Image 1 (cartoon, rainbow, N blue to C red):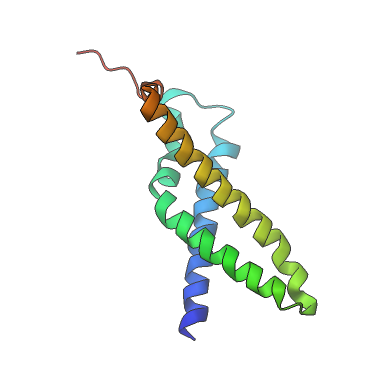
Image 2 (image 1 turned 90 degrees about the horizontal axis):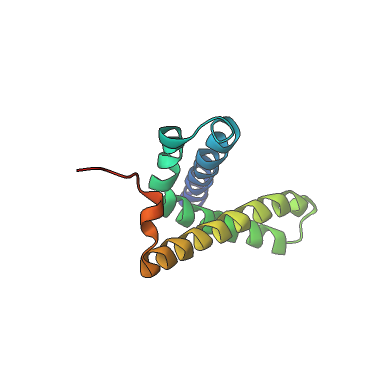
Length: 114
C-alpha cells in the first residue's frame, strides 16, 4: 500500500515537473523575450524533486515492462518520456557546470548597471 502511494506521488511530481517545462515552451517561448522567460523559473526550482521523481517513475515503468503482462505495452511511452526527461536533466546539469567552469555563466544573467 505504501509503495503504491509512493509511486503515485512520484508519478504526480514527475508529471508536474514535465508540465512546468512544456507549458512555457508552448505558450511563452514563441512570444516572450527577456522577463517573459521567467515562466521557466518553477521548472528550475522543481529540478531536484522532478529528477528524483522521474527516476523512480522510470524504474517502476521498467519493472512493469519486465513482467511481460499483456498491458505492459502501456508503460513503453512512459518509460521513453521519463528517460528523455532524465537525459535532459543530466544535460542541463552538465551545461551549467561547463558554463560555470569556463566563466561564461554570465550569459544567462541580466546586465545590472551600478
